[in-house]
Image (cartoon, rainbow, N blue to C red):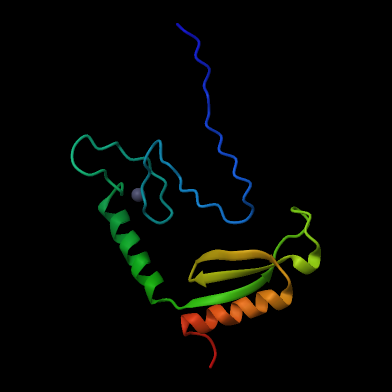
Length: 129
Ligand SMILES: [Zn+2]
C-alpha cells in the first residue's frame, strides 16, 4: 500500500452565474421523465438510456411536446439576499419553454432586464406584436 493521496484537480474558476457543468454520470440513470432508475452499464453496444420502453416513449413524447411549446421570455426578481446583491440589481432574465426554463442572466437592473427580454423576444420572433 503506498499512500497516494487523492489529489483532486479542483479547477476553481471564479465565474459567477452560469456554470456549464454537465453531470458526469458515474452511474447512468434512466432519462425517462421523472424516472431516476439506475441503469445497468451496457456490456456491449451503445449504453442504454432508458430503463424501459415506456420511459423511452414518455421521453420522446415529452420532447415532442416541448418542441411544440413556444419559448417565452420572463423577467423576474432573483434572490438578492443570498448573493449580497443590491436589490436594484437582482433582476434576472429567463427563457421558458413549457416546464423547463433557463436563466439567461442574473444581476441586472430592471431596465436592463427589460431591454434584454425585449431583444430576446424579438429574436425569438414570438411575443406580442
Ligand atoms: Zn425509466
